[in-house]
Image (cartoon, rainbow, N blue to C red):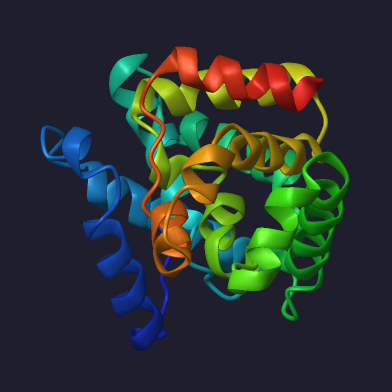
Length: 214
């Protein structure tokens, strides 16, 4: 069912390059993982007639790995992938002008300014803007920053919260919980520190979720 032809060679090269960097630690043990992720992405962008955007690979990866972990079909993994995007990420991947992504950046800034003015003004002074550190967080829903167990836990919680705006509060909570690191760091490394941040423990996810919920 996911056997779909795609003729844009430049886009195919980009997709395959992204897949090579997707869930590397887990996927090296799954010989067909790359082919499955490729099939899901190609079928999805063809069906909805949208251009490929980087981040789709990071969303598809964990759902393909469910095929191995839960012994589900690829078709089932695809349907879960589509439902997840429809609920939390449709606007980001289906818009050509990134209006929703830019709006999300504005909301992050507004929330941070309200909940932690000191951190907000530090970021303003250092030109640490959401466009530079939060794009991959939003477009992958943290998949490229979390261990597999952590991302399954986070996504389960997002589904239970059933609020497609909750991710914005999660991002602000993450920033606030790392405020001391930011404040005590040289201004020249704050952006790189945020971009390199990883979340590998479920307890850490729960701490961020609790603050985001508050």
